[in-house]
Amino acid sequence: MTRIVLATHNQGKVRELRRILGGLDIAGLDEFPGAPDVPETELTFEGNALLKARAISAFTGLPAVADDSGLCVDALNGMPGVLSARWSGRFGAGDRDAANLRLVLDQIADVADGRRGGSFVCAAALVVPGGVEHCVEGRVHGTIIREPRGTGGFGYDPVFVPDGETRTTAEMTAEEKDAISHRGRAFRALAGIVPDALSAAGLA
Image 1 (tube, rainbow, N blue to C red):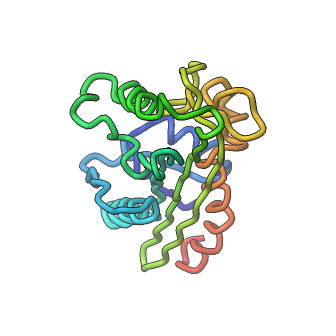
Image 2 (image 1 turned 120 degrees about the vertical axis):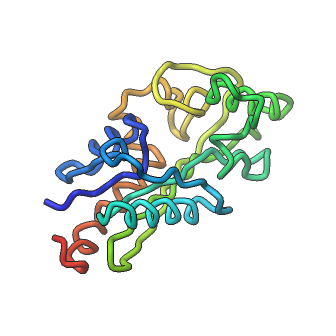
């Protein structure tokens, strides 16, 4: 079975991808000492995902999967978007997730409840040695609540309630979140592409 490298040191993401892409041999960057830390310098989720997947595939010589994701808040004209992980800048030097979340809540504190919509967006890219590239997007719409709830997930999960739900994504089990999440949708779409992409590259 061909090994596929997920371009992250985050073991939570590795476990998540293994759940979603069951049956595939998924490795994280911890198994590849010296792998580059690729800055997310592009202006779109797709651009950042492809940037990382290309770099890791070139370094390892293996098919690589990378994603870029974030929260797009309607009242902030789609921000923080690709800046979601570093929205608080130098003011988030401690608990970056908490600082990012608090800054977003502060920025929309005066926005009425009926106008606090937003989306979690994820672009997932596959790059196979030889030049085969694919990128897909997953998106889930919801509402940004005023105070965090729940201890699961990470990032902005404690303030995001998906449409049709009363719970935040931080109040869901991992399996429940995978079923509806932006990352789950993106990676399930990518899973349908992986076999043909590997076959086309002679790696199946």
